[in-house]
Length: 455
Image 1 (cartoon, rainbow, N blue to C red):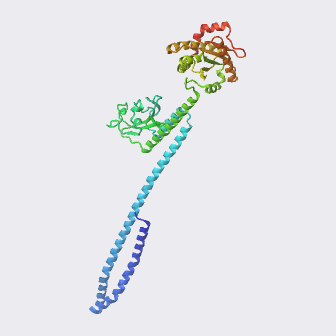
Image 2 (image 1 turned 135 degrees about the vertical axis):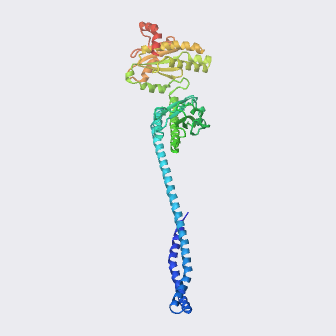
Image 3 (image 1 turned 45 degrees about the vertical axis):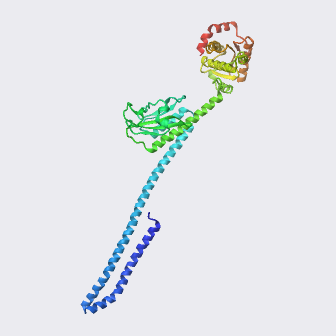
């Protein structure tokens, strides 16, 4: 590398040489002029003496001139070499600057993509919105290639296509059905296959309808565990730019992190709103969901249920049997009632149920069906016989939940006093008690059919 100091020294030497050359030539001419003239006149006289003197001067000056010319050429070669090296270094520096500019531009584009992707994923409130961001990202990163996202299901045993895009509307259709059978997911490394017919190509790439192809597989991790893959295909030997591979790796990283966060939040919210033993809503979640019932879904019936003689069941058969009884009753409620009904374990052996768009009379029929289904489930489950008492009432529009639950609880207490294993209706504005005999008779006759319609 030619330094600035070396170049300045070379320029100074060339300048000194240009200044000294004529001085040396003139000095040498002055030194030899007189001796040459004297020698010429000594050798010959007249005009011939001048010719001899000139010849002597030329003979003496010629080697000096030749030497100065040689030194000048050598100095010029050195200067030219320095100039050539400077040109080479300048060209290399320009090329390096161009390469760095390209790299910087690429980095800026990747950083911009990562920033925009992170912002889009952060605004996504659920997995469907995250999947939409992923699909739009596929179109931005590989607009001319079919790309898909495969993620494991809850069992982590099967891969499910969550997102897919393609120029012709057709996804790559990877045949891998499990994370353990995907080389990219199993190795947790990006896999590039230039030709499906290559010896070391993924076996799942062979025998596809589109024939030979290339593939790029980027693993997706959630909470440190590889649970899926981004799979893209192309023409055989088609090369994917490193920037595009990096963008897909960024997408896999950020999308996996966002999905993982959403799942943790959903699981935490589920744990906070459900009873761990029965899987039903807890008291707080029940109150919150009751408050979200829109006015057009009124009337709303609210029931309280309590397992009869539960303490005796626990003391006689043990708490494990008591827990099994609670879980069995919860399962019967879940299977017998509508999906729109709100069922909760309100505390201990007590349960609260809300029936949107259902009157208390119609809900009574459904609860009688629950009683019948519970008796059959106990027999099948091999549990000791137990029964359940219910109190039910209609919720008035705008009425506070505590007031509704107090009426339902009053009806439940009456059901206990009347012998348990029954449904007691508390009409709003009245006192708890069984309805008139005609309504009881109608409920007894059509309880099963009406309960089946309710479910």
